[in-house]
Amino acid sequence: MKKRLMLLLPVVSLLFACGEQNNNQLYASSIKRAGNEESEEYGDDRYYALFMLNFPRSTSTSPNGYEEMVENTLYQKVEIVPGQLIPRPEKDPERNNYEFQGWFKEKACTNEWDFENDVAVGSTILYAKWGTGEEEEYVEPEYIPEERIITDMDYRVTGILNKSVYPANEEGVNYKVDLTAGGINRLIKHKEDVSFAVNYERRIDVTLTKATYDEEAMAIHLEVSSGKSFNILINDITSSLSIANVSTYYEQKASKYEQNGADIENYHIALGGSSSMENWSTSTEDMAPIVSFNHGIGGTTVQQWTDKLFERLILPYSPKAVAYYVGVNNIINSGEKGDETGRALIDLFNKTHEFLPNAKIFYVLINKLPMYGSFQSEFDIANNYALEHASTHEYLTCIDAGVGLLKENGLPHFGYFCTDGLHMSKIGYVIWGAAVKKAIMDWLG
Image 1 (cartoon, rainbow, N blue to C red):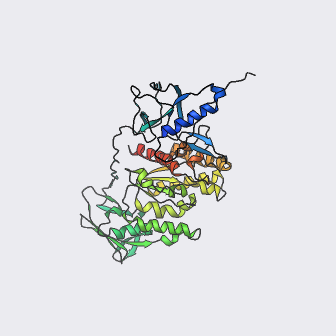
Image 2: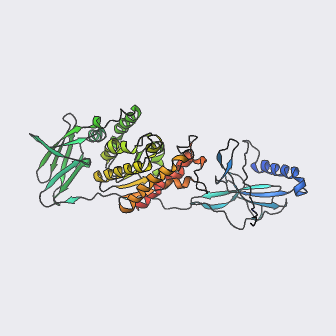
Image 3: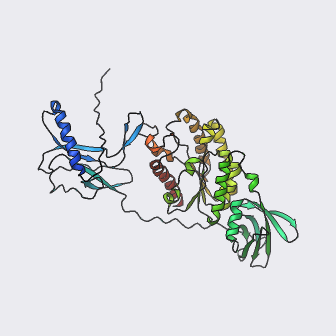
């Protein structure tokens, strides 16, 4: 068997003390000392220019055995002669989605190194500067819902906040509708004009002229240009969808979302699911300029979203798209197999599509998790159910946001997760959230 000679290039990790002394001076002295200590190898002192990538790229193993992000990864090391020019690297470094903007004298990239005039006085460290380039400002496209035009009558009320109306069989009342607190709070907040809440079919020359909500009577009154009017009683079914029997926290969180959601408008992006969605505390800012709202609740399962939470936290807000990250708790906490979780996901997708037939559904695939490798085969099975469903249903798209959290060997990177090996760190959310945003932006166009 032939032996292969492998050249291992070391990754240099640097720690600088805070103070007034120049970083180059500190680092130059450390290089010089290293040269003296290794005199048997080098024969005499040497001087170097080190070109640093200046962004987290590689990993190192700490004494406790965990892999950590290493900043300022060495890009190139060149031996130099003090008093002479430093040669520029022949090839500029590359970084996905960034533009290289030159070599600078300090990590903050304030003063650029002039390769035509600046000379080295000793060992020198230079830092790469990165920019995002000139990008056109993104403007979220306006969403215009499709109206259903009919000819058999002038105006027909089909629902309120995506819940079908049914005959009231009471004098002066045309319909009843079952709503939850989130929807009712929206009606109260905008009681002088609740036209946003009405699902209808109309003759092309007939329009809705009045839509008000009577909070005391819990009734909507509608008038249309043809002269007809409608009265719709509201039946509050929130208590029947409570999940307090599972966890008081879940119910408190859901109720808070319902209380605070009165100002949410129709046709934005809804984010729902378990802790990875709830803990995305910067989702509003990260998704901007796309307008979104986040109703994630940590610890919840797919079935809880299908049976209870979808109707309370997604449906009343008439989103044009819904992004879910859920299923982890089914497998880790509830002990479900991937098949059972996968089938539950299909039920959630189908119900969402049934009640919001014009909305796009995104499913963020379950991440590979650093400390839960024993569950990975079940995660994969559940993910495959979603992927297969998406392949035959245009309303569903799967997002593999977790791929950006992996190392080159395909294993999850500890640097992108909290110490529990389950939840993402802030830097993890930067990568994961960007992938979610990009997929939705690509759909919006």
